[in-house]
Length: 123
Image 1 (tube, rainbow, N blue to C red):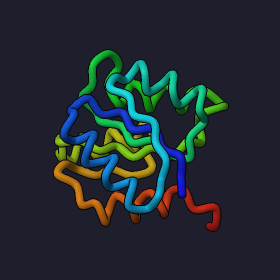
Image 2 (tube, rainbow, N blue to C red):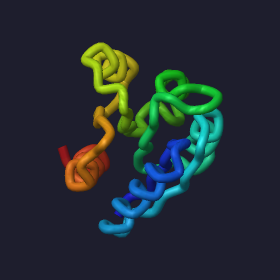
Image 3 (tube, one colour):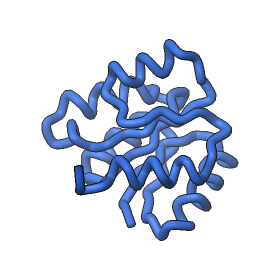
Image 4 (cartoon, rainbow, N blue to C red):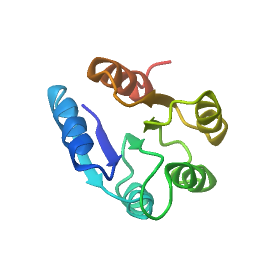
């Protein structure tokens, strides 16, 4: 079980993410903007974060870059989950320090496996 921050502004996608996390008894905090995501991650220190790229305020890339600049949040694993599946977008996510990149629509099984992988304490 992991504690996860979800940053997603589309209500239907947020519900789907929450239903998926519930299957593995993960706990989560949901926010709908990049600014709220950054603040929530800084204060709650989750096991991982799921960031959409296109959100009100800061976009997901800007949030990820700010997280990586701060020693207290730099090691927070981040999954970029976006409808922008372009190779350049995935490359940018990797360069910014994302732990994983998934496209919408996403596979719940793949998302849960990714969470398990990036939050695993074993090498």
